Amino acid sequence: MRPKLTPIPGTRERAVTIGLVRVGLAVERTPRSTDAVVHEEDTWRVLSSDTRTVRDPGESLSRVMIRALNARRLDPGSVLVGAHRPVRLLAVVYDFDQNPCWQERWIARALEGILHKADILGLRSLTLPLLGTTHGALPEARWVALLKEALHGYSRGPLTRMQLVASGDAGVRLMDFLQA
Image (cartoon, rainbow, N blue to C red; front, top):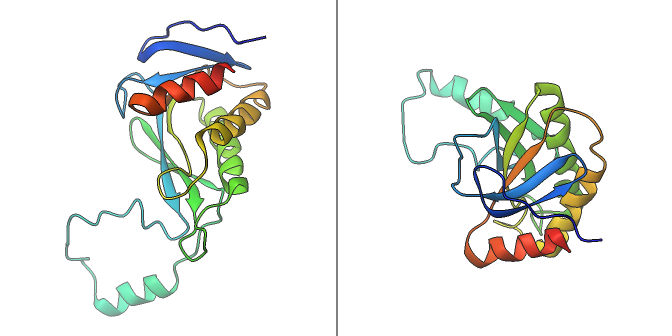
């Protein structure tokens, strides 16, 4: 049986209910009506670093080097919480020390981690990109299957709305995969 499609606020034309969560396409990259925005991250936090601005670190070069040497690699599949409004969730789905730099199991683990963090933080809505497709090659259909698996396993919590970030034809294909 195909899921029922209905419009939800802040999304394009249609949405699909999977388990407890209604999933639609985000009209904008960071909708104002969302509690959290998920961003892709790598094991060394290169993707979230501010590379546009060169600034004085405010400490000696030796302290900067010590901090760099003591930096800890993040586990692929983990999810970090930022302190912004909306909440910023960093999903670690890339390890640029490996080839390929992504693995399907990391993306699946990150999706489950995102739902777990949403539960802990009391999030009712979140905006999610297609994890593992920016620097990786996870097919859209497989990504949707991983999302569905994670959502079917989400049996509790306040999360009721998820907005996917995809544009043009990719958005249309996603909704087709979701309703299949």
